[in-house]
Length: 242
Image (cartoon, rainbow, N blue to C red; front, side):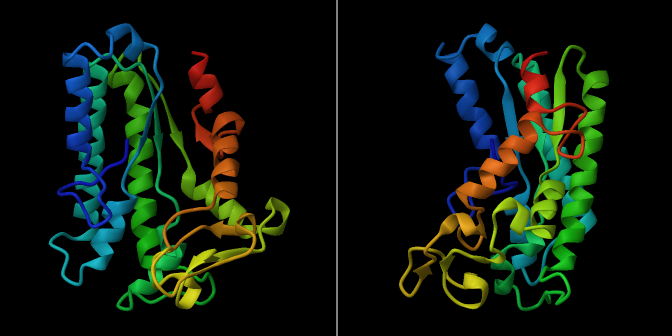
């Protein structure tokens, strides 16, 4: 499940409330049994669209900290709902370094730090949000007895890849493989005027917002059997086997 707090955004992502309603409808229509829910692994990734949309707005309605609080409350509501339906294994993934994606060139009012090629203001908000998510995960065993959960440190793993790109098979960790404009971050891949690199696996980013398949493979492996720098208090393999 992914999340957008209020309304469907320009990319067509359904709000998490709608996704929960759809899930409830499947249960009500007997398409999903309770024992299937209890034996399933729920993967929850939310916040990236919300944080990016916050920084697109020149006049956001909330302060960054208030926006983060709103996002975290939304996550807690989702966990409340899923556990009430019988979920017993939940993996919650943090947001990656949004300030480093090529799409940050779309935000002229938030300058990029030359030393990191990243938007520090966005990354600071991401870090605050991720810290709150970890607290939510830490509280799950006490709040929901019998429920197991983990926090996937997307930010930390991605920054590890960016810090030593060659050892992970990357030649470029700042630009998108497909797009147009600075960092290929001005125009979405597939639109007129965009171009695509010859070898996508050399790139950390596929388009101005999303990682490449190579990046996703490395992230998946880190969360599946990595140490507590990648997932905590356990990795996905351990969560599946609990």
